[in-house]
Image 1: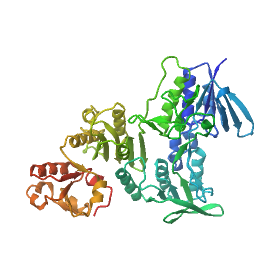
Image 2 (image 1 turned 180 degrees about the vertical axis):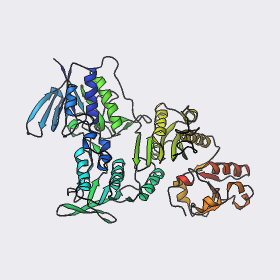
Image 3 (image 1 turned 90 degrees about the vertical axis):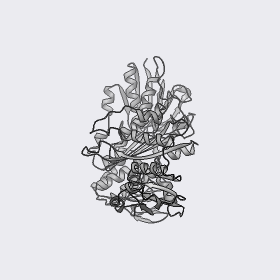
Image 4 (image 1 turned 45 degrees about the vertical axis):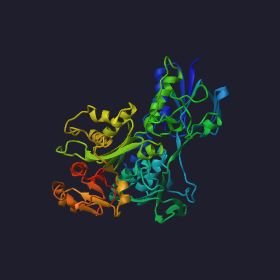
Length: 552
């Protein structure tokens, strides 16, 4: 008799498990149970369907039931797993079309129930034209409102990836978008100075953004949305997207006695096994391990889901040593119009909360040779442990290429590399692809300078808090022409080539912050003033390029 593999959930992790299982075990019977009408679809592509970048909804599906059937995987659409009975290796399943229930028995069970959108308990959340975005039907509904019914004003609640991507794509469709975020910044997984750079860019693209505001009600007439009400204002709107986050979908597992982890997702080991024999969990419903801290984490992402599915499949009936996934870093990347942002590992906020003694650098550089047509500026932030010099995390933002730098950082962090390793890594170089010293290596060199005491810096956020202090002086060493295009409030212009002869204009008793465009001239000014005996001096990390606030 064939071994029975039953999989609950048919998006990324579930279908990856199924596809790998039939390749590994030709004599098994694989069934996938899913409540949805579609299977194996690209959830991360849904915003781009809304924006008509992806033209047809069929392009969002990687595989359909017929193709799975050819590979000897049976897909049961519109079927809901209602109860798991581990002692009998039985799952009670309801056919949502007929209402009938039946039993499915398994030798191995894989739970891939994913995550579900958080819907705030506010009045009006059930009105027509209030959407979530978790399925193809959701995306179809939003796009239909724009293209068929002519919606011209939309409000997005939530400033994470999905909310921002939908805001971008609705804007591209000619819709006026307002975005409301409860936190004091968009991109909550990024550090604040990076998020502020993104916010400034998006506002220039026409998106109105309100941070630090709570959605408290949705108003409507005749069952349709007319306004979103926050704790600070009322926003007239024809469509609302609630995109405030997701939670692991674990009710089914919990009722079956499957242990949940500290993050509320299903607890699994590195082999994707739960606490109950022959039951595995993968994807957005399952917990991960952070590779840096070795502590439980939860990263609901398609890339991680696919890795988990593959590992689970290999461990269903292992032929030798079990496969494993030791952990992940939460590496992510997002495109917002022409702006790209990526992160991996710990943020500065994470490092601080975990008690690390660390330094950070913020370094603008070109993504390719400055003389090569089409080069763009990107800003790299590194978080580095002072004691071990190990790179803990990184973030990259700009209109240039950011996925290559963030993947370099993710690789280095996975291998527990130091910033010195990063500075000496042998990366590919040619003018169309990189500078001779890539932006990543430049950032590493700046970090080495900080760690070895060659320079001391101050972050944009820290400097912003000090502005106006009588004990502070800001010296901008750019040219006069550059200075006149925009300067940090209170700055005095002393160009670098005049610095030594005008050093007497600088008060030695005050904290002195040196500023230039990206940091190089400020570093040279720092070395000059140090040679002249100045002590209380710092450079502004990232210079004017990475300053996320208004210039005067």
